[in-house]
Length: 581
Image 1 (cartoon, rainbow, N blue to C red):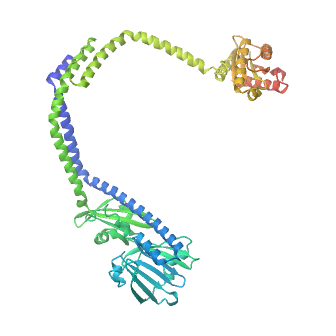
Image 2 (cartoon, rainbow, N blue to C red; image 1 turned 45 degrees about the vertical axis):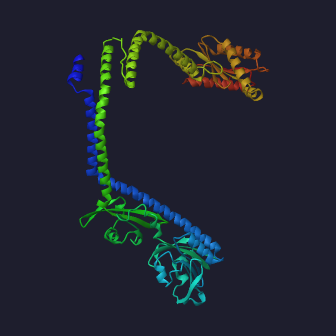
């Protein structure tokens, strides 16, 4: 052992050098791992991050669509209730409260039509209706009796009329899908996205039939509003976001043009292939493409994100390079600190090694090391206490083992006694009785011995509990157990069979002998004055003895139980043997 210590501490590497080498190795390995990740895993990191962000965006859009649906259905249901009131004010208030609404209107069975439009929703509306810059609201009226023309009323922000026009009309409300669908439905309906006739925008109509289908109230909503709230989540300078349907019709987008959509999405035959982000090359450039199916009222809509690979990857590369720089710089400035603390730690540790060598040689005279390091001082004290403890342990080990062995033996005896004892009466329990019964039965078969069983039951015990309470009933059971114990032989086994029933196993006893014992018990119980129960107590007893017809131990108990039942039937307070049945 001395040779090992000489090689380790004199010719080997010092502790402070080991500490420095350890931390340097860890630092270099971490730098290499980060560099390896930069070279080989940056792509996976970027794609994973894009997938996570897209999942969040898709969830936000789904929640937004759900909120819009709930709000729109609620709006159209409210409008259905208010349709007969001052519609100009009501429609204005609704359009102001919900800026994403394009128009509110009512269609009639005779092709009359009443529509209120927010001209500020789309910049093309002003020119489409030849409105003025001050115009904010437009009211369109069509009289069903003369549906070939329509009236246009223009209003400013304060609902002051600014203009009035009459134009030719070819629009028939009853021919529109929203009118037909609403009329055939008891609830409010929602159309699929479609291109509005007045402006170059895609929208959705929510409608509800009222007055037994004679009128339909409806609102229009622009799809473009679904994506406007997500500009903070997507860098539109680097990525393009499209919302489109199963026919690959763009419903809305955050993109300056649809070239990327036409180049990539239109050429994809199976959209499921892009449920996870894929890298696609085009014109020597790599692009990231991800398509997510969006649940939109049982309509197949999709969200597509297209981004140039190098633009997405650039911030991740910069982030990892910065992390490498910070890690290397931190590692360099910690080297002097590592050297200092390794020197402070190593000196008292060498002293601890010498003290441990003394313990190895059975020298327990350990001196405490003087050091300013609290942990090493505590360790030195622990060495001293350990030395004393080892000495005390060696001198008292045998005595403690003997003491523990004795205690364990006593505990085991106590556990064994408890496992076979009835808690209330102190007699043997059912488990012990079953064990003795099986033993006596096996002896009887092997040696042709005779033994008997007495099973007894306190008469009318239920009335004791019912009339005097369970505490008095328990007292009767405990005192009955003492009486039974005083009547049996030392070779007999007495136990509580269950409830108010007791069982006695009598080895080497014929039925006549067992019946005599049963009669003594019957008399002793009747003559006893119980301490808490004011009435007399009687018992019914059944006796059975072993014979060769019994195939198992339970048979003799069953025979005794039949005799007990006979005693109960014939008036109780008596002994019946199996031969008397």
